[in-house]
Amino acid sequence: MHVKKYLLKCLHRLQKGPGYTYKELLVWYCDNTNTHGPKRIICEGPKKKAMWFFITLLFAALVCWQWGLFIRTYLSWEVSVSLSIGFKAMDFPAVTVCNASPFQYSKVTHLLKDLDELMEAVLRRILAPEPSLANATTALNFTIWNHTPLVLIDERNPHHPVVLDLFRENHNGSESSSPAPERICNAQGCKMAMRLATNIFAQVPQQKLVEMGYPAERLILACLFGDEPCSYRNFTSIFDPHYGNCYIFNWGMTEKALPSANPGTEFGLKLILDIGQGDYVPFLASTAGVRLMLHEQRSYPFIRDEGIYAMSGTETSIGVLVDKLQRMGEPYSPCTVNGSDVPIQNFYSDYNTTYSIQACLRSCFQDHMIRNCSCGHYLYPLPHGEKYCNTRDFPDWARCYSKQQMNVAQRESCIGMCKESCNDTQYKMTISMADWPSEASEDWIFHVLSQERDRSTNLTLSRKGIVKLNIYFQEFNYRTIEESAANNIVWLLSNLGGQFGFWMGGSVLCLIEFGEIIIDFVWITIIKLVALAKGLRQRRTQARYAGPPPTVAELVEAHTNFGFQPDTTHHSPNTVAYPDEQSPPIPGTPPPNYDSLRLGVIESDSEGDTI
Image 1 (cartoon, rainbow, N blue to C red):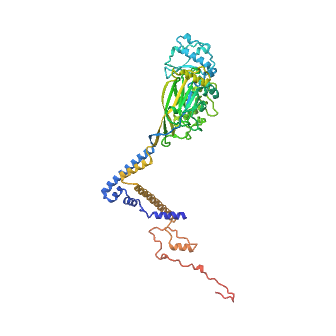
Image 2 (cartoon, rainbow, N blue to C red):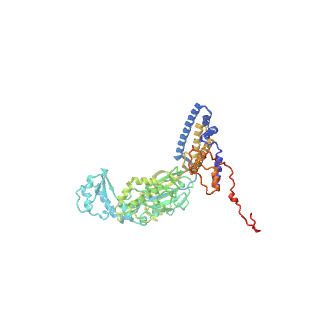
């Protein structure tokens, strides 16, 4: 009840506002507003009223249209890119070096013997000038041939490729009726397919693969950072499926990054590497040299996609410039700070590295591979409890892998789910090379390096296996490429106010006045609804009586005489309610009911007197 009374009081106070009707409210607003147009509608004559009404309505529509354009532009979340140049001492980047050959041939011979023989036979069969020489394959071991055959694919008709079996007549024991592959296909129209190496190494435990690769003490002959000596012990080892053992300088999540004292070659990293080219694996590594990459200290190196080669027998100098990218994030840029909002499990998290879009894309592909093929590809990390694909356990994995690679919808879904990192650092490299060592100095340099590595006076190194690297900052200037909002809230408010002031001559106070009239409009509507509800309630109350309402005398009689029944006879409007001989009762104060003052007989105690 108290709440109801309070609301009614508020309602009565609001009724004392600008008016009780919409017309009165509109007239009051036009007469008191600071906006120019509505005042002229009230003050001018009929013709000018119509003109000013049309002009005011037109300009109000223009203001609303302009406001819509500005608000839509603001909600598009466009960004502008600014470039600034700074100068400060910087941390040296992480440097990853890998041998171009993932394994030492002397340690994988037992795994690749049959592969070598089959590859040699394939090359002879394809390139031999005479058919008699191409058929000299009787001593081959075809045990692994039945699992992953080497084939020649005729792609001269790209819509109908033909798979040619190079050794059908040899390992089936009968001559094929089809012509020899070398007679119907040439190098321009055919491709040779070979998945055997991946199938072999996928079945070898990673620890044994690490033992087959090049150890750090053999690869890294000499190391110098600034004027401080370093060795292979200052490198962190990781295993890369493409390049085997890779070694990273100045890398890790817990260690502090090494700062560079000054720009220039004498303050950078100098390395002399022995790639051991004489122990390369035939048919598996056709490039000799070192694969290297510069990256952030806490990022995983995707060296196959982002690395560069350094040639053997050369000194490669790499000058570094730093670009820092800073993206704004949602809703301006679809980027992530640490990958926690990306709906893909990061399979590279075991390396304790930061998020990168490369890791996300590879993890997404590996996830699709596991779900569709029941096994993971050898080139990507494997989640716990899963197995790598191999022909023995998963005979159809190669076909499934090919379908996954060609699935455009799958690639687009991975690209849509993965996001760029909001903060990124890129290292721009200027590369120059020269022969090293020179002919005049190579003897004593190789003797010194042989003594350093093998403790031998004999010459155990040669030009074809040595690589020298110089990595340094060209200058301490760095560029910052930063995103900022192209249209912020200040831009939006200034443009909205400018359009409103230009077309309507209004300001923020005019908007407050307009808000006030909206509130008054709402309250007048509430008042009318309340009044309508009261009227409906009264009409429902009157509908309970069949005839006219009772008179005062009837109400008094009903109050004093409980046996009274009102006259329910229907009286038409033209019928006299009372006859002429009987005058209607006069309303007034009803007489007292003397029945309530009844006198009784009381017997007296004295001689029976009665009163």
